[in-house]
Image (spheres, each protein chain N blue to C red):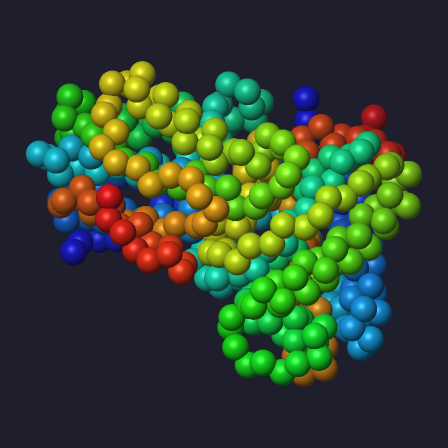
Length: 161
Length: 205
């Protein structure tokens, strides 16, 4: 196993070969990955909000589904990935707290996941697997040599997607 | 549109800090009354942090913590979150239920006791806010969860993410005898409410 790169909240990064990308404690945010299985180029973005268009203060493109995925795409292509081979996986988008009243912000996880899928569809990047929703946090690790994502939770075990 | 934390001037930040001070102070007094014990409180620290720094506060993004979350509505809308390490949460529950369990597992009864503590703390916090600002606020019932710090903190961080790239955090430490109970208060007004709040306190035109 190669270098482990930590991706923070509203951040993104890329690696290749035997590198590993990880993001810790995903809650309502969504971890979006792009992967080229031939070139073994991998990218991971920690998306916080659905759209850059509805927010005035949007200096950080990695924060949003629309601009974040575009920037991630740019970075994996630069590292040698081919757009036609790219596949994606998603994890996160939980609702950590539940309230009876319909508060929009409480559904942010769901909206984040939806926005990521829409963006990936628009870019014609197939979604191979997802582990989305629920009311629990996730840590994910993306292995560039296999494209496998390991999803870890507290009290709900570990799985691969 | 809202005002972002980055755009706020020092006077406005100081006023927000003072609100945190008073709110958390009232909450600590309420806790002392509820437990019928002397609760010492450190002077609350108010910090403006980057997103990535927030998750590190309680010992890393993957560390299990207990979060108690409230909505408030009225002239001001937003959320309050009370965050504890699992150890602190257990200690608080033990005190309230007059027991001495040495475990990291929060039972159903523990959790319900913690929700009650959360209720009282946030009630005290909000009532000091309404007195101070003259604004009307109504607080919801609590929602409690135990999970990774990063995942729980993503909830207030996302709220702040809508107005900027920093988080305004009010940190309060409670102490009871030899036991350190470490708790964090997050006051997260909605985007529009920052303006209402600052206006009501006379620091925004």
